[in-house]
Image (cartoon, rainbow, N blue to C red):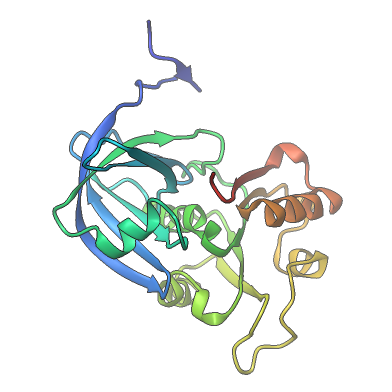
Length: 253
């Protein structure tokens, strides 16, 4: 059977590949970025994700999906893993997985929630918690491609300590021309921050986003309730549903 075609491109069947850890970066007390070497990796687009599978000595297997954290870099990929208490996969990846150890990787997965460097429209990124990961891949890809598409990121987190990529975001907001970053804190705000902690609302999206008449591309990622709220706000403000792309996650069974 021939491989399916998407947008004029032939998509090869997904296969499991053996990946090995080559670098670990601590992002927050509960989140880490893992850089994996994946021989035969076919490349990917910002916004796509991978499946990571673990196999126990007794043969039991568990797999979870993780967003790719950056643009394609040869046969190396990066994923940022948020440790989930009592999880089957994330505690192993953050606490036990060691440099040189193998895991299985399948991907890239997804073709709708992606940003391509030939896009020139303004871009609005709205992330909740670890939902910032695929959005950061887009921010990094924009810089790597030398794109002049204007980007705005609205990042909702519980506290300042929960900001993933905090130092890099500060640097990029300063140095990446055309990138604006705004935060919404839901539980505790940093000293000197104007306003009280709150859940993201109409005022945040209206103040820090793009007006619909500029026809921006909107990408929203985070927990299901967060994504539904933001998508409804954007559509209510007049953004066409076809230009509001969403990616959501939630607890697994």
